[in-house]
Image (cartoon, rainbow, N blue to C red; front, side):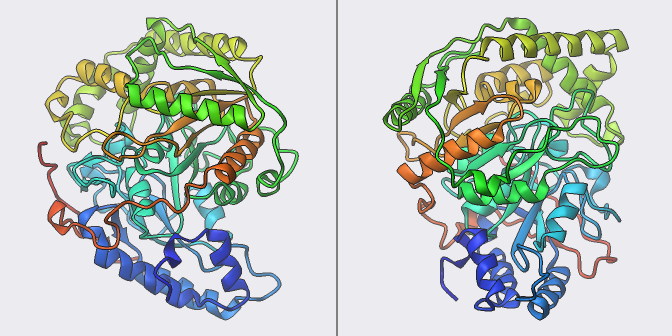
Length: 499
């Protein structure tokens, strides 16, 4: 099989299978073999579904080409380990769930399965998804294929690393404070956080009290992201938040040229200073947008300290309400959960109200813009273990994170769609990202713009320098295997090294 098969657009793979020019069995076998050979250096896939995937591939091969076959029949997919997957171990990166095998799928996972995707495994996450780095004690550190001494980000870090390393052609992720856009920026990928309510939170309901998190696509190719979002999106009965149906499928939108857009460029942030490299990437992107016929002008977002403080209250309270034993949590989460337990109901409501007021102010201030452009992150990817010394001090950790993740949590609070484009590089050759946030519920404009930018500066062929043979000295954690689905999987155990 061609060496680049697993890095091709998922739409192309699905089309080859549909025309019976590609065997789903051989494609899944190639994916599992690639994981076995290369993932030792990255630790991106933490649970394999080898038997289940092969059974699904054999079924896909039987029905490929039928008129009623689903659109992505036979395409391998890795799912983030914060999403429920029926019959496949789902740890949430925490010790108390090390052997948990759910009997239900999250709604959007079920939709991906019904669309024909085959789940080959689960991807590495930080414990309970609370950090923008992927270094849990249970699953071990996940490493960036661009530099295995650095993080791919989080909390969709394993998803980004697996995709960037060419282990799987498709991944699913989610974003509660930048968790799709941060890994996309760190790994040279396209990440889209959909609008609040675009993708259902069923069956368990939204995170915390404010609907910060949304599942979404992480891809190389913008058209792939649009097609995957078409599969994942839509209301499910009982959803507390939902977005209006788009005028057209997103797969259609990416073929349409965007009109001339008015964009605001943000390069300052009240909670830290953007690195010069990050600012340069955003300014270069602004010039590119101008060359494509759009207007870009400087924009300052007026936020005070109450935004950061209120966000941290809600984040800590949400963690404290998570139904897992708190005495098994890692030091940072244990300390943060303790802070959350000390928050009164009135304090939580006040923080939530403050975030809602700040959301209204931000959306009002940017209402005259079609899109807001900024660096995705304050700086290049962090080194593995760089934040270990802050694990027992949640206030210091949150302060450090605020100076790293930049504006990414803002769109989670406002509910606006937001994407990271793989534009720019650090002096060390590491990927950087440029974030573009759209109007409420307007993913269509973002996807049209992203497709236009990709056509002008095609990033899809850009690969990490050493993905053909992973550096095995960087890590040796082996994925647990659910084979068959009823077998109790072994827990992974690996302690992150200090930098």
